Length: 141
Image 1 (cartoon, rainbow, N blue to C red):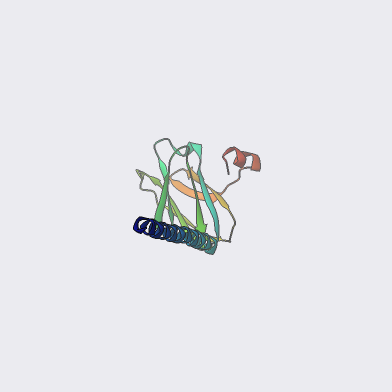
Image 2 (cartoon, rainbow, N blue to C red; image 1 turned 90 degrees about the vertical axis):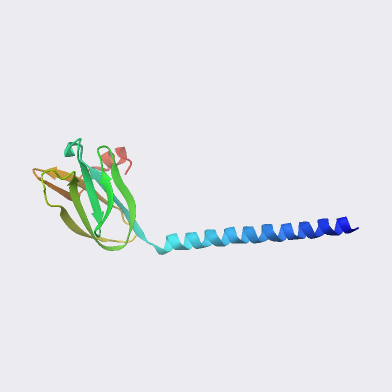
């Protein structure tokens, strides 16, 4: 009889533990979804042109923080929050001691922004992408 009572208590405790674990997972998922929905923003996509240089990377900063060194064949593609941001681009390594260039953008919620990092003479700069929809699809944009 004692053994049956221990077994019943064990099963009750196990069921209670599983219920709490399931409830915790559901709550965690709900909070995660709410946090994702609370941060509206769009994607910022920066493509590096092919003639940028095989031994150079495009250093991208958003609001003064380096977010990527975009090397040949790569791109920067991440969500950024809505609002005003300063994007700064420079070449690394900066052998010619050229100055970085900056642009200010205003991000609208759920809108994507496509920019191209270009090299011209001794200067690196960003400009809106002039790729056609077919060319953008080719890059997976």
